[in-house]
Length: 178
Image 1 (tube, helix red, strand yellow):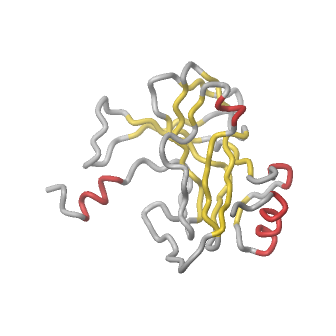
Image 2 (cartoon, rainbow, N blue to C red):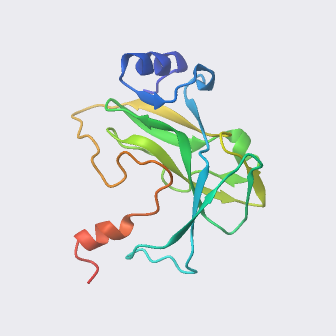
Image 3 (cartoon, rainbow, N blue to C red):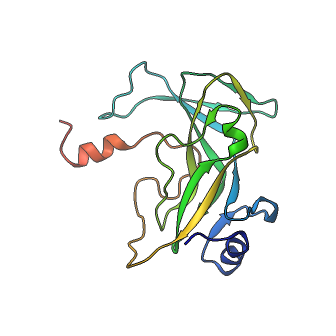
């Protein structure tokens, strides 16, 4: 079951769901609009290596905006910190942003119960696109979970700002990297 807008508001008020800052005007019939934070990361090496940390460059988006370029992956973040120990969150791009040719989440829309923090956005434009800090860029839906819950305690917990891939850490822990 998916939470309706009024239930999202009720869950924020009674603490089952945390959205900070919470703005009632961002509640939709069955989702909550999230806004783009001001920091972007891009990978600086021509080849990204899944088994090693990859260097990044940080850019701040000012009020004049920033032009995203096709063929580049930008790691952005939500302005809001979102999390719940009760509901399963899923983040998708807003349809109005998709109609501008921007992919907001490439392959990872599902969040974990127990994660609390800013969400990293995987931004990929089909053509040059100017984006602005604070623009409504995505929407998060919340689903009721069934069964015992193991709360998330992973590497992205309490994230602030965009987080580069930590996939290499999983490989190191598994002994895949010498």
